[in-house]
Image 1 (cartoon, rainbow over the protein chains, first blue to last red):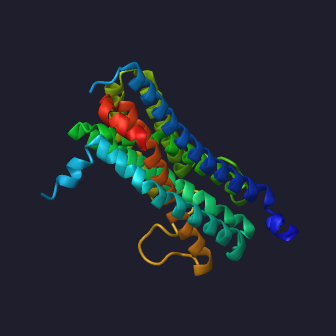
Image 2 (cartoon, rainbow over the protein chains, first blue to last red; image 1 turned 90 degrees about the vertical axis):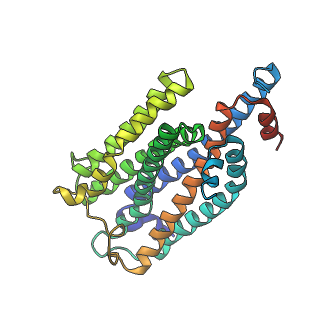
Image 3 (spheres, rainbow over the protein chains, first blue to last red; image 1 turned 135 degrees about the vertical axis):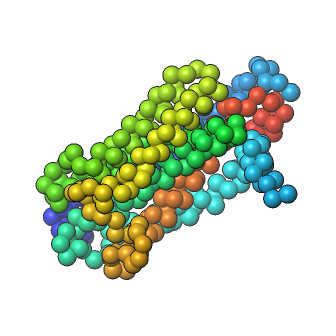
Length: 54
Length: 245
């Protein structure tokens, strides 16, 4: 296990690369879902205000 | 008529419902493929005979770079369709791409920088491949800045679409930079004609990651596209329907 983490001496470059990429993947999933939720909330408010046309 | 599918793609309610239906078909395969690719890349693939374990950065670097280009081309094509056919849904798709593309361009640049530190002896070099990828980041950021600077959504759509379409010339420059100029960056080892320059145990996790990131992009695009369509919609009856699910 510690040998795996050591990455043949390249741990300081391999692990940050993977961590950064996975953080960006996770953030993208969170941002996308939040953007849809926000649009739905705005649309709901617009309906209630009667700002939308029929 | 063969063109009905194209016309239906111009209909916001149709695309909204279609995107919702398709989302799980991309979300779960993306998660499974990326997990499998990570395991393959970190555990199963043998160390490189020259680069040792440092080469494993390829399994996050190449998919991020692939993602950055795929997202840009998608954005530019959607923007062009929006400009030519004045299709609201196409503009919504283009707008959905920018933040995804910018973030993965950052991932490609940063992981490349970490890879370059040991292999080239530097985090950064003013090299054609690196500079053209940096320009790609500025194109994404410029697109986003331009959109947020224009309040009127229709004008923002058209102005930013023009920028996206013009910027597409950078894409072949990025791809061919390593062949046209004397670059530090290695030439393509997978995205080329003929056999890939890699043994199967190294290549398989990379291909799995590339497909996984492609699914991830479609998933992200579908989710964001629904939001963008809703933002552009003013017809109460279908908003009510869309919110009901």
